[in-house]
Length: 374
Image 1 (cartoon, rainbow, N blue to C red):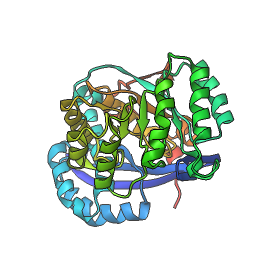
Image 2 (tube, rainbow, N blue to C red):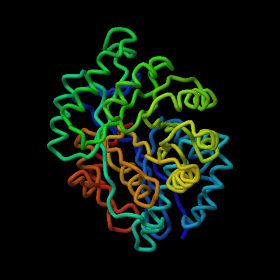
Image 3 (cartoon, rainbow, N blue to C red):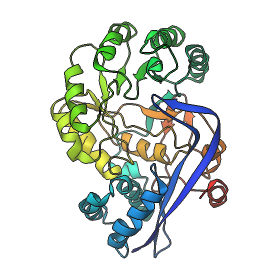
């Protein structure tokens, strides 16, 4: 079997409302569907989350010439080949290709990916992840999430730092968390995420309220400029309160995770399966974290609008002994419900791993054409 081509298809769908995560917002959902084609007619699927023009150039000029004609089942060797070339900008593409290669391996062997990785469980618990909104809107959504049986939720904080509250105020952030705990009761896990919005002292000011509400994790609290500062400032924050710190979702490869894990600058590592370098590298980061007694709760891109990355992440979580929740983006769109032939479902707060080979999902070619854009 040989790789013959790699195809990128940008997809998008306009949202009826603005999606916001800290300083980041968008009025649509979408990304890039990636397909690795082979000479035996088996296609591996995945996705990417960056600029199409930049990814296409990197793929065509740097990675595809090194992959074309190679056996897609040689996943470890091909990962090293891509990593060696990553100094030319391949970091944003490697993860998507690696996921697609695992999809091909599963289809060839007839097994779902999580079984190839060494299954630990067949289901993973999810937390629902709404976007940043005003406290009264989040309260209404919490009522619905409680009725739906989700075991966890992630609340977006930092309204006073992005123009949605008085400048530098944490009043609405406090209201959001207090209200959620009151509505959800003690049986639902609550995580909070500022999307790197706070400074050090604001993060500390919020700590007593988070402790009183039994918050399960405190995600990306600090606004920093580079990876070295990130590790230093997160390590500085550690030990100052009794809420687990989580983060490092923007790091690439186990090598970038080395310092933050060794310094225990977080309690929970959050590699993104596309951004970290694929299934291969996410599992290495999870294993590295386990050596230091840390948990792993992978990041999922909530602006993707489809479930390809969600499913890839679920396969990884189902094979981890230190895994936590699966992040489940809150809002359905036609892109999400139509792109895959069969949309994965969450039932009673649990995501059941697909039992079909590979990722266990299939792209509807007509829906791909329908939502493709230049």
